[in-house]
Amino acid sequence: MEFTFFDFNLHEAGLKYTPYIFTGIVYTKFDKLGYQNSTISNLGGRTNSLGIPFVLGFKYRVLEQLILSAEIGSRYVFSDNIDGSLSNTENYTNFGNINNRDWYVFSLINLSYTFGRKPCYCNY
Image (cartoon, rainbow, N blue to C red; front, side, top):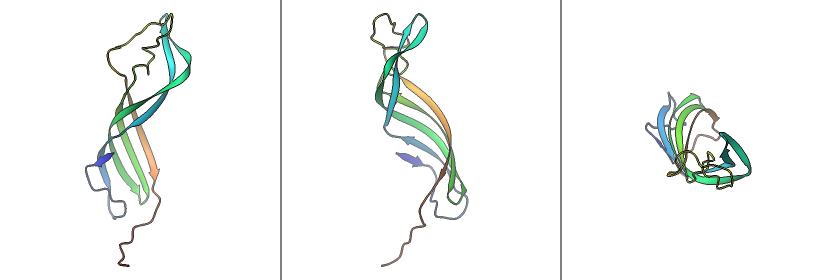
Protein backbone atom coordinates (compact mmCIF):
# COMPACT_ATOMS: atom_id res chain seq x y z
CA MET A 1 0.00 0.00 0.00
CA GLU A 2 1.55 3.29 -1.10
CA PHE A 3 0.57 6.81 -0.11
CA THR A 4 1.93 9.67 -2.26
CA PHE A 5 1.94 13.16 -0.78
CA PHE A 6 1.44 14.95 -4.13
CA ASP A 7 -0.60 14.04 -7.22
CA PHE A 8 1.51 11.70 -9.37
CA ASN A 9 -0.60 11.27 -12.50
CA LEU A 10 1.84 10.23 -15.22
CA HIS A 11 -0.61 11.16 -17.98
CA GLU A 12 -0.48 14.88 -17.19
CA ALA A 13 2.19 17.15 -18.65
CA GLY A 14 4.71 18.97 -16.51
CA LEU A 15 7.09 18.21 -13.69
CA LYS A 16 6.02 15.21 -11.60
CA TYR A 17 7.59 14.23 -8.29
CA THR A 18 6.39 13.18 -4.86
CA PRO A 19 7.59 11.79 -1.56
CA TYR A 20 5.76 8.63 -0.50
CA ILE A 21 5.38 6.10 2.27
CA PHE A 22 4.83 2.41 1.72
CA THR A 23 3.80 -0.58 3.80
CA GLY A 24 2.37 -4.02 3.16
CA ILE A 25 3.28 -7.64 3.74
CA VAL A 26 6.58 -9.19 2.62
CA TYR A 27 7.88 -12.74 2.34
CA THR A 28 11.51 -13.21 3.38
CA LYS A 29 13.59 -16.33 2.74
CA PHE A 30 16.95 -16.75 4.50
CA ASP A 31 19.64 -19.31 5.35
CA LYS A 32 19.57 -21.17 8.68
CA LEU A 33 22.49 -19.83 10.69
CA GLY A 34 24.10 -20.69 14.03
CA TYR A 35 26.68 -19.03 16.31
CA GLN A 36 29.54 -21.17 17.61
CA ASN A 37 33.04 -20.21 18.84
CA SER A 38 32.62 -16.55 17.82
CA THR A 39 31.71 -17.59 14.27
CA ILE A 40 28.41 -17.56 12.42
CA SER A 41 27.95 -20.82 10.51
CA ASN A 42 25.49 -21.92 7.87
CA LEU A 43 23.53 -24.89 9.28
CA GLY A 44 22.25 -25.89 5.86
CA GLY A 45 18.85 -25.34 4.44
CA ARG A 46 16.67 -22.27 4.22
CA THR A 47 13.73 -20.96 6.18
CA ASN A 48 11.21 -18.19 5.63
CA SER A 49 9.03 -15.66 7.39
CA LEU A 50 6.45 -12.98 6.75
CA GLY A 51 7.13 -9.36 7.63
CA ILE A 52 5.90 -5.78 7.48
CA PRO A 53 7.89 -3.09 5.60
CA PHE A 54 7.99 0.56 6.64
CA VAL A 55 9.37 2.60 3.73
CA LEU A 56 9.94 6.30 3.02
CA GLY A 57 10.79 7.27 -0.56
CA PHE A 58 10.86 9.92 -3.25
CA LYS A 59 10.02 9.45 -6.93
CA TYR A 60 10.54 11.74 -9.91
CA ARG A 61 9.44 11.43 -13.53
CA VAL A 62 12.60 11.86 -15.61
CA LEU A 63 10.97 11.37 -19.03
CA GLU A 64 7.38 10.71 -20.06
CA GLN A 65 7.52 7.00 -19.14
CA LEU A 66 10.72 6.83 -17.08
CA ILE A 67 10.62 7.21 -13.29
CA LEU A 68 13.57 7.48 -10.91
CA SER A 69 12.97 6.70 -7.25
CA ALA A 70 14.99 6.35 -4.07
CA GLU A 71 13.83 4.83 -0.82
CA ILE A 72 14.96 3.71 2.59
CA GLY A 73 13.03 1.40 4.84
CA SER A 74 13.05 -1.18 7.55
CA ARG A 75 11.24 -4.50 7.69
CA TYR A 76 9.92 -6.14 10.80
CA VAL A 77 10.15 -9.92 10.37
CA PHE A 78 7.99 -12.39 12.33
CA SER A 79 11.08 -14.44 13.16
CA ASP A 80 13.98 -14.14 15.57
CA ASN A 81 16.34 -16.28 13.53
CA ILE A 82 17.20 -14.10 10.54
CA ASP A 83 20.58 -13.45 12.17
CA GLY A 84 20.99 -16.99 13.52
CA SER A 85 20.32 -15.97 17.13
CA LEU A 86 17.95 -18.90 17.79
CA SER A 87 19.64 -21.87 16.19
CA ASN A 88 18.17 -24.45 18.64
CA THR A 89 21.00 -26.76 17.64
CA GLU A 90 23.41 -28.62 19.88
CA ASN A 91 26.78 -26.85 20.46
CA TYR A 92 25.40 -23.54 19.16
CA THR A 93 24.83 -20.49 21.35
CA ASN A 94 21.95 -18.02 21.27
CA PHE A 95 23.08 -14.42 20.83
CA GLY A 96 21.60 -11.00 20.28
CA ASN A 97 18.32 -9.96 21.85
CA ILE A 98 16.29 -13.15 21.95
CA ASN A 99 13.31 -11.34 23.54
CA ASN A 100 12.05 -9.67 20.35
CA ARG A 101 11.81 -10.32 16.62
CA ASP A 102 14.38 -9.28 13.99
CA TRP A 103 14.39 -6.20 11.78
CA TYR A 104 16.47 -5.40 8.74
CA VAL A 105 17.09 -2.11 6.96
CA PHE A 106 17.51 -1.52 3.24
CA SER A 107 17.87 1.31 0.76
CA LEU A 108 17.59 1.38 -3.01
CA ILE A 109 17.60 3.51 -6.12
CA ASN A 110 15.19 2.38 -8.79
CA LEU A 111 14.71 3.28 -12.44
CA SER A 112 11.39 2.07 -13.89
CA TYR A 113 9.68 2.27 -17.24
CA THR A 114 5.88 2.53 -17.41
CA PHE A 115 3.87 0.79 -20.11
CA GLY A 116 0.44 1.63 -21.39
CA ARG A 117 -1.40 4.36 -23.17
CA LYS A 118 -2.99 7.52 -21.97
CA PRO A 119 -6.56 6.66 -20.87
CA CYS A 120 -9.43 7.74 -23.10
CA TYR A 121 -12.44 9.16 -21.30
CA CYS A 122 -14.77 8.94 -24.30
CA ASN A 123 -18.56 8.81 -24.10
CA TYR A 124 -19.43 5.54 -25.82
